[in-house]
Length: 446
Image (cartoon, rainbow, N blue to C red):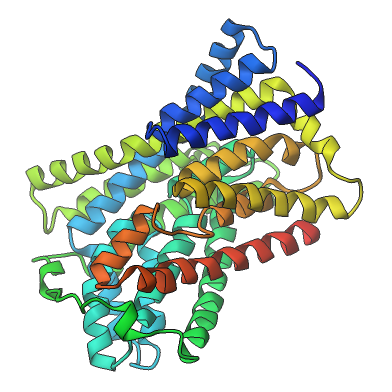
């Protein structure tokens, strides 16, 4: 297949082709990833038919493992949003908290909602409540916006069934329950510390209202309230059920010599998410009729389409990379001994960060990075979880004007570009660095 140096060079060129296609030619990221995959295979000496087979098997293999769960997860989140259940979760948490701690409550709400719901939808749901909270507590708007961004960003980055952490378990071959358990615990820890650090920076006079705010957006909080919307506890059921079923399988594997077939069945990611989405349909029936529920599902699948294509294309890229043997070349490029641990984690983060800054999509950045580093993870003693977390952290490192989340946050909050950089960009940078630090520590300990 060629020398290690040549393979590494072809990898760099293939990534450059992907970025050029996305940034300059404005080609869809999924198509760009396939183009990069074809170049990588052909340049490294693979036969044309072998390259095509690797692309097809990689695309189908990854989507075969996670495509259905991603689809179910997106439908679950859309039903929760459209039924008013998501809003009720946030409203209850905020109202049950003192004014001094309310900003942390809205951050926690964002974390919970972003487990099944995309970041953009979470922000749309929470910002009316957030602006009302800012007026009621006399908190400047960046505290609210930053808390929502931090909570939503941390969960969307680390907690399945959001696509990126779900894909991580298949690309890097480790247990989904492990990703879910560590994602929730470490994600909450990172979010809490990030809010503390971010608020401390704001307290030092970072925010300049005359420069960072255009106008305080007028929002009608009552527009988010649905008749007969599911209450707080009922709305949590579709989120918690799949998580508990998946964790049941993880615990059973760790504690039982032989796991009963029924537990293996129920804890499978497809079955667990199916149970969750059926619960969401049932609960949403209180506030949505059959036509509205069907429309909600259709909207969800439309939103999931591009995510599934990009995810599958990332799998194709990873399959070609694996077939070239570049994983061995990357492993050999790192020093032996303890230094290799932090070098691999930092290299993973650095690649993901560069891709994120360059083209804006955290999904493209993290999935591309994980496919590149999968061979390295399998060739060392570092658990795939920590490589995944480093790649996922890089995927939210520096979100700026080429990131759709940046504009959703900025426009709905009435902020200028500088205000967006001080809220969305800065707050998520704290989350990113904290997850990176956790990844380094975790890689050494476990």
